[in-house]
Amino acid sequence: MLFFFFDIKSRKKSPTYLSAIGDRILTAPQTFGRIVTIPDADTAMIQFDNILSVNGSMITNGSLNDHTNYVSINNFEWDGIHEYWKPKFALGDKYV
Image (cartoon, rainbow, N blue to C red):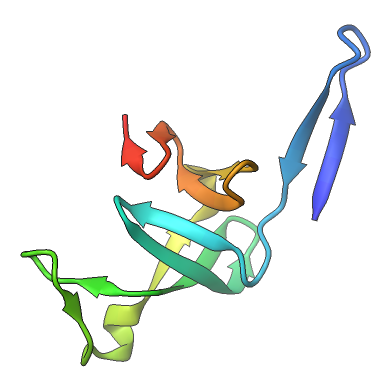
């Protein structure tokens, strides 16, 4: 859901996006997931697309706890160009 707020002085509109079930979310470099539940306004349960081991290979037989996690949406911002949530101060899929 996309909302636009207008600043009366500058007449510019700034988009504010609210999190929704199914939104993609970047949690770490090259680690994506999807929002599966939103128990609170600022908390989301995410399910990871892939689980990476320490050496970077994918783990296929992990438990449900390995595939899900809770995050605070306050620590993320919406990237409208790529259409996913990313950590604040991240550039693309890299942290700054």
